[in-house]
Amino acid sequence: MAHRPRLIVGITGASGIAYGTRLLHLLRQAPVETHLVISRAAEIAMAHEGPTKVADVRSLADRLDRARAAVRNLAVVQREQCGG
Image 1 (cartoon, one colour):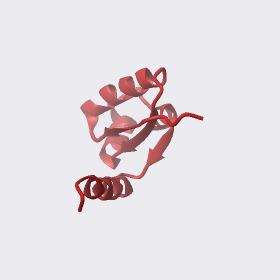
Image 2: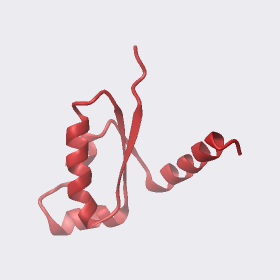
Image 3: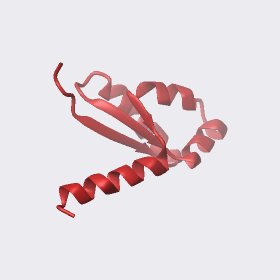
């Protein structure tokens, strides 16, 4: 099985909800593995401000990553890529 490149989609606030959701919809047709990182603020905004449900957005991604763990993992990858 061929390795699919990974793409992390982060949603952190109200305006990011529409952009992130649309991007995840589009990426479902692409040969990429999507990881979603969604902040607590974005979850609260979804619950109070619009028709978009957190569970619906989560279901669009291949993987859901916790925000703090994702930031920590990105820092490790960055250090490795920079030789540090």
